[in-house]
Image (cartoon, rainbow, N blue to C red):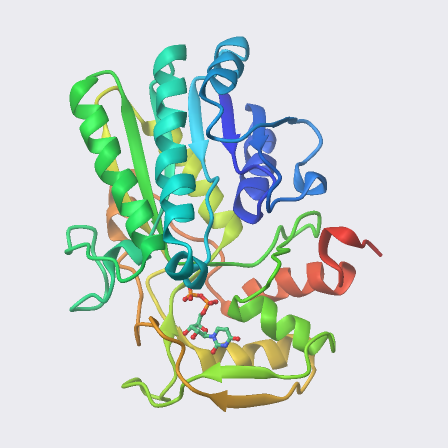
Length: 331
Ligand code: UDP
């Protein structure tokens, strides 16, 4: 299939490009390179440096490349930043998607797989999270994604041939097992990369954001899905999309790990006893989030392959050891 991947120079988008190329798809990569890395786009995909706001230019790419499906990863994704700069998030994530949909409409492209997030659920009343639960985000990032889900529904209602899937990610972790791609954010705030940077001596210590939550060890519980499983789910969903489809799937492994458990696993994988301190809670962190992934399992037969957190961390450790400066360095 001819696929356009937006956000192709980012962490998840670059892994998606790699996976799609390996599956024999023809991939066009799109990124404005505001946060992504040119070097992250696998050889074999042509990179178009365009912003989502460039509707006409994107429509031309879609037509010229005879694109059949858009995988839409491009987004700003820092919760804290979304609180201080909400307009930027709504403009980029929500407005950018409207522009992309307009380009698709002009070019006659009627299939989209969209990166949504479990942040659209806010603080759920029950665990595990099933797709039909109430969605009430607690930050602008979550709202910027939930608005897109709404827009997709309305757009689909008006265009019976249009098909989309919104995939609600839990915590995405790990790197390409062959070591070719990784995670390189600036600033890096995600737990597993922070632990591995501490193991490398690039951070003095790690701070646990609160150990007084109502969980067994007092630290927050999250559901970590390996990036390769995540992107393989995207291509599976893409292949099943039929005109008129509106699909919503959670993407997690269905079990949670506490921050303490992740720290122990990272110490074991790296063999480094990096310093850990307990600090205050980080505002906006729900105590516990994990998916009920059974809908995508039952409907499409998807099951995550990387379910041992040590194995997940090992794939990331390989990348961080070989690329201590991220894409700016290679050993
Ligand atoms: N966390 C932490 N210290 C850090 C980074 C994260 O204790 O330096 C915790 C955070 O409070 C959350 C979990 O680790 O409970 C996962 O955080 P991350 O930022 O990786 O993902 P999020 O769940 O916010 O999407």
